[in-house]
Image (cartoon, rainbow, N blue to C red):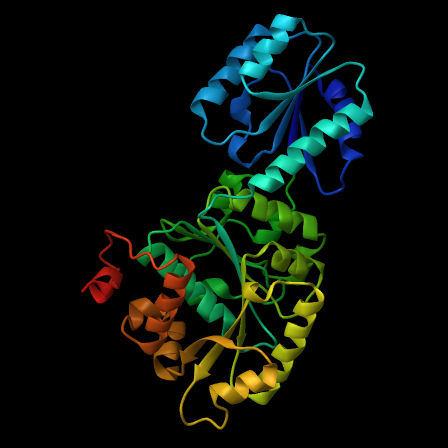
Length: 391
């Protein structure tokens, strides 16, 4: 979880931070001092923060007013823990009324503090993310299957044609090239830089990402593997925690090497698209990956096999592919090589260069399945979705 401590001084905040740090190695904890005796909650990205611990000697009326404002005017607010020397009965009632989760007293008792944090942790986990927010991963058993091409173009359709807010994260730490499928722009930073930041929030994500479209942001991978050094699974976990608070869809483009970072991303995914082609070398690799997913206890419904570049002239039919990998094919993407290559060479989405192509139609079908069949009213001259599906 992301935890912020506000104390009279940073020295006092460090004492609380040492206690909180002993609870979980994956929590992201930041310490702040008061400014002119005030909380100044505007310094915090409240939407991406899970817990705010307010450490003070005595209950402040100004704190009550600040918390009341947050409770009444913020749609998404963190849980608040108030830590003071003493509290009167009236003060306790006031703190409860403005939404404080727990009131603790100095000297800080480790077990009470742990229990308060654990209650918040359990509650946040049970609430989960917003009903419309989904984490979708794309990966292949071996390189060259077309996973990045399909993932980037699906994100474009979800954003431009379905009116969803989408964040695309390129987690290929060696040679990631997702941005080249969509734009010639470059971002101000890369995903490894911001994910490792101790102050990650939605504003940092937006400033680092490439704005493919107003509702479609792309976090590019680092341009050299050295820049990804130190990136851990907990960093990716925190990135996802922040992103799902602000985006309808978070699309993760993953390498086929299953390390700790990749597995964390897969664990957090609602849907995993495994991309393959009707070629035995690809099918053997996918079969091995599906076996690993089974060992990781992923629900079968979470993993969807996407058969790319399928045509009628190949030796392997869909039935033979399914028999080879022992799993049903969820989606087949027709082989439309010329239109796909033209889109890649132009660096534009295929629904722009070839809106009526077989690939574009197949990707729209995936988008519909993810959104529950909703056909939105999107006012965008680029979008042909409404005209194509409205009878």
